[in-house]
Amino acid sequence: MSDTAEREVAVASAQKLGLFDADIHPVPKSGTEIRSYLAPDWHGHFDHYREFQRKPFANANSYPRAVRALSRRDSWPPGGGLPGSDLNFMREQHLDPYNIECGVLQVLDPVGNKLRHPGFAAAMCSAINDWQALAWAEPEPRLKGSIIVPQEDTSAAIREIERLGRSPLFRQIMISPRSEEPLGRPRYWPIYEAAEALGISVTLHVGGENGFPVTPAGHPSFFFEQRESHVPAAEAVLTSLILEGVIERFPRLRVITVEAGGIGWVPALSWRLDHCWERMGGEIPQVRKPPSSYLRSNFWFSSQPIDEPEKPEHLREVFDWVGWDRILFATDYPHWDFDDPKYAVKFAMTPAEQQMFFRDNARTAFGLQ
Image (cartoon, rainbow, N blue to C red; front, side):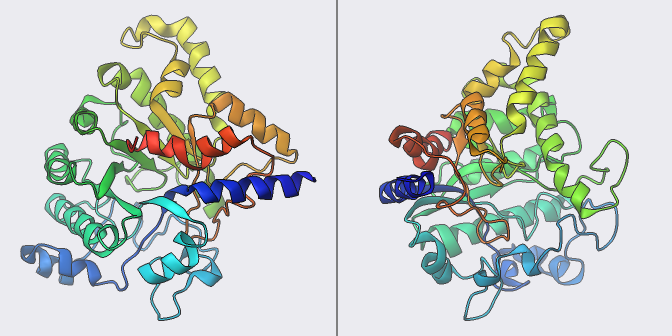
């Protein structure tokens, strides 16, 4: 049997078990759908002012306009609306044919946690969360929501986490890796304390706006640079969480990075952090173990967009270095760089590896087993 045939048989076998998709993007059917979930006191603000984000420039878009709505050409619902806005079509095109046992909703638009107005940010986060619950997770048990929080307003974030953190419709707190301060700072610790106490995960989906340049050299010229900045952003957040002692303080905290440029950067970050810790660990007594040990115990990494080296066996080596129990399968449906489980990984996996990658790791990371 050829490598390709063996791989396809393996994926078909994994699909029979039921796949876990760590990254599905829903969007409202219209620009005003969220208004019906918004507290009435904020309707006037929504109608007249809408979004005032932390973007550095008006009308800026940090995502490449490679295709309309950032989505696959075949993902537009036949009944109208944007890709990701029609639950029945999502079932027909994605959940059913791939036998998705569970999919986690990652809401990028509309925004809540990126708004400058503190009160409106909190109100929008609540509205977006109620929309996820009522329009998606309740009618479709295979989908789980993300608690969107106004992360720069810690007290408001905690209120939202306490409101929804025990609901079986939500399995994670979603925060932006591009924050006003490094996410390991004490101002954000109550969020991690609440997540640990409730047994839900903290997820860092790439993107977000904090008003600052995404590179140390200033605002980039090209979408290309913006996209590639996702990796150093994720590296900076993980470094901050480890070095500020967040994992030592909250040892049961589960942190997931989603769509952070694949996983190829994780081994190099691990080696570099350990190298520096050996020589400069005296500066950070709160970090009691080599940083790589925290990466191996408290962090998970989604596969999409999967790394595509010229030789597939090199990707297997990356999986080995990161740890087979640390990697979550994700498709990024319905976006243009969607990873189809039949073709994403171009090397053969053992049955045990398939089960970990396609299902069991995510169950652990999201606290479902």
